[in-house]
Length: 458
Ligand code: ADQ
Image (cartoon, rainbow, N blue to C red; front, side):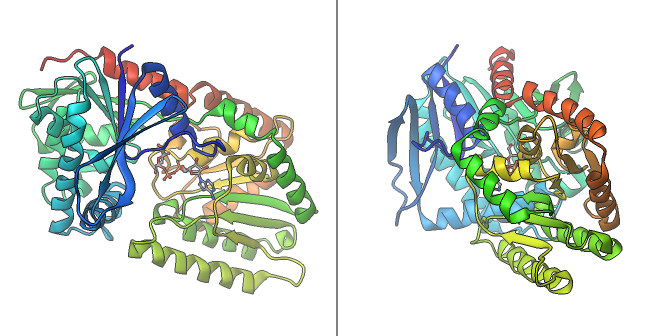
């Protein structure tokens, strides 16, 4: 096994309380096994960029991070990554901002990362770049003479060609990807869009997994990310999980709970979800005082104005719906703006008869998988899942819905609430088997193997 170098915008080191997500844990395990290194932005700002690298080793995991200056953070992170590529990759060209300074900041920061990174790379290292923040990284490393195998994994969707061409200099960005040996996507749909772009905009040819453009070849594959299933199930057995379960039991009494857990992001379809719930309450007065929607949504990316708008709209919407339907002893929506630990999330998921995961567009969506992993096999809840989440490709036994159609979502919630135990168990079993089999360790082993075994000539 060669040494693995993982590169992502932010680096996640082992924490003593074990509170990191499954992705961090899986990558840390790979780094530990191979004696590798995780490289990225420290998350800190310094007055002026100085290129100095801070090394750290925690619990057998080594990292190397650099600080950025405020202009870098504004143009690269808040700008091109979060105001341009994130909305565009989630099909929201209506709110994507195409500002020239964002593009140049993005290139500058990628170069600033490539500079110290290339000197750390040894000839046999395998390099794994993550996500839309760092698309040009391979071609920058190649300019420094790096010939190692380099893979790229995109955690978000890849947009259809007709949308992608709205990005100024889209060709340059996509051509830069031909510095990679392997490019991985969450689903066949995103891969298909990528191939379509390469064939139709770059005149490329496709042969099996391989795409060739102007003599440069890469392997484009599907490799869906999973959760740390075992660890997640174990979290449900902890004292913290039991405590919250007990609190929920007391607070719910006879109420049937529906749960939503999302980062507060416009791609997650939160406003549409509340409106669907409102539809259900209007159409089914018999459900009043018997159901409650618990929506947990910790704010994210607060520096970007669209995120502040979503937050305001949600406050307004939750207040309006509660105002319209609440009784002195019943509030239909419990809207909570904070994060919970993994152990607590397992308890929330398990307490809910329905898991409502209705993004308008999502690369994968790990909440859908976590909800399934947390269920009681003897009395499992039902997953209502957006057909526009990457997870839908693997989870066809969920109730798949169009999140833009409030009546359809309301009907699916109704159906989930009424579903007989035998059907719940049958659906759950297939879903749980898939989530357990294709977990996050399966995913990273499969992807690293694909990078390592892909034949390249450089
Ligand atoms: P995200 O958009 O962040 O990730 P998601 O896959 O849903 O989306 O993962 C969110 C993670 O954050 C989950 O593990 C969840 O438990 C956690 N989380 C959410 N709300 C929380 C809360 N209130 N408290 C604590 N934890 C919370 C991006 C892509 C996704 C893709 C992932 C992984 O947008 O499509 O699935 O990367 O590739």
